[in-house]
Amino acid sequence: MFIPKAGSKIQIHSYKHNGNIHRVWEETTLLKGTRTVGIGGNDRTLVTESDGRTWITREPAICYFHADHWFNIIGMIRQDGVYYYCNLSSPFAWDGGVLKYIDYDLDIKVFPDMTYNILDEDEYELHRREMNYPEEIDYILKKNVNDLIHWIRQRKGPFAPDFVDNWYERFLTYRS
Image 1: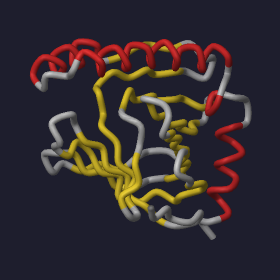
Image 2: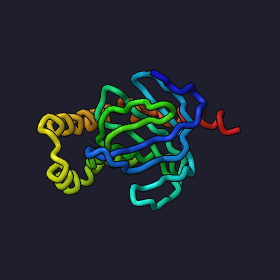
Image 3: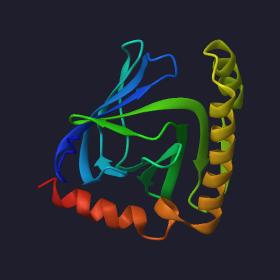
C-alpha cells in the first residue's frame, strides 16, 4: 500500500454510498500519514462539488481521518476559536496520493466552547432509504455518533486542548 509522505500535497475525495463522487478538496498538505491515520492541513483550498460547482475554503483547517472510526473531523481555525465539523463516514482509505471515504450525511458541528449540534438527520434518513444503506451500516453510524459525542465531551483526539494548534504549527512549516 502506497502512503504519501508528510509534506506531500494530497487530494481528499468524498463519495456517497452509491459510489458517486460527492466532493473533492484539491490540495491538502499531509502532516501525518499511516495505514490507520491521516492528518492534513489546508487553507483556502479549492473544493469541487459533485455538480461541478466550486468554492474555496475560508480559513485554515486541520483534517483528521482514522481507519478504525466511522467519522472524520475537521478543525477550522477562526478568530474566535476552533470550530469542528465532524462527518459520519466510512473509515478512510489511501488510493495513491488520494485520501478517500464515503460520506454518510450525518454531521456534528462543534463550537469553541464544546457545545455541539447534530446536523442533517433528515438528509441521512432520505439517503438511507434511497441508497438502501444496510442495517449494519445504520447501526455502525449511530454507534459512532455516540462515540464521537463521547470524544467531544472527553476532549479526546482532535478535541484535545492544543491538538489543532500543534498540527497547525506543523502545517505552517510546509508553507514557506
